[in-house]
Image 1: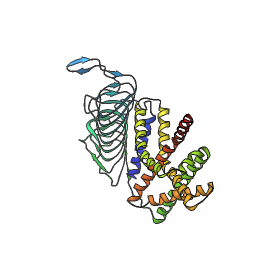
Image 2 (image 1 turned 135 degrees about the vertical axis):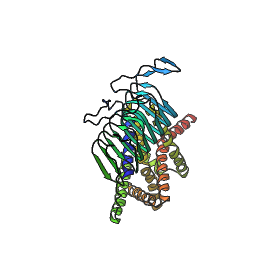
Image 3 (image 1 turned 90 degrees about the horizontal axis):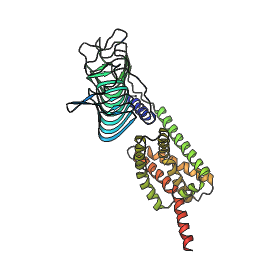
Image 4 (image 1 turned 60 degrees about the vertical axis):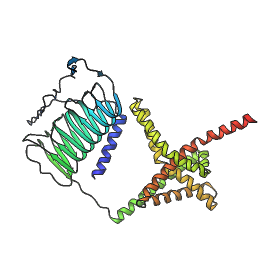
Length: 399
């Protein structure tokens, strides 16, 4: 259950990073209306109603800081975000340190993320990282991490939403906290850490002293449901049928929209088969790199999202295109003629690929290589027509 929720949160954060271009939250006053007052530990945290500080010290002098009035896209091995940004910030790197003030949302993908006391995020923080350490002020937090720490000088203006392996809370949360972790470390010096409600999930219930949570505490026990033999068999059958249906749809669409492409795949020789495997290894990496550049370049989000969905469709269709190739070999071996027998042979190949992929240890590697081969087959035969036209043109010139 924990891994499933983690995957869901990761996908949610990824989609938000790709399509979001607006602020979802605004800061609110820091006093709790129900009488459970939470005051910031550090006086460095400014009041919510104050505007962005227009003067910061610089080498002993007071000067006007750089203010960015657009969305900011950053990508590097080590990043230090110390600007004043009147917009959203998208950051991708190995180590990210946040020191500045951001009026919009902050999206981060990194290995290690650190928020210093001077950090002030007026809207929501979406972060997926191995390690997250937060000080300073953040309005809303949505985090997926291995280790998440809310330090003593941290202040969350609204809600805290975290899914992690280890969660440590030593700072203040003004409203509700929704937590999912295997290990919890909650510290307090006789003070209210969470002003609203606490909802958490774990394998065992926590012993939370009175006064730490201002509202109600809801515990969701993590349970591992072991599937019965019959349920596992039905899962395998459903998975196999799902793969066959997907292969059938791809094959029928290819026969209808690109019959010449199917013919080229069917007649592909051994040399092109090895080339297809190499292309299948290189092409996804190149496309993924291009997509990252596209997202961080500030190009229209519609173009980015369309390219991403196209890339996902290509990766999902790898086994289907490989099945077309092996189905053609099957028909030649059995001397079958006709489109119906070709479709049947392709489906038998797809089922054989699925069965071998279920073998422990080697099955996963085999399925991955077959998918890469299918992706390469798509790219190689998509440009094959141009090669034929070029050769014909050269022959016509010689004649």
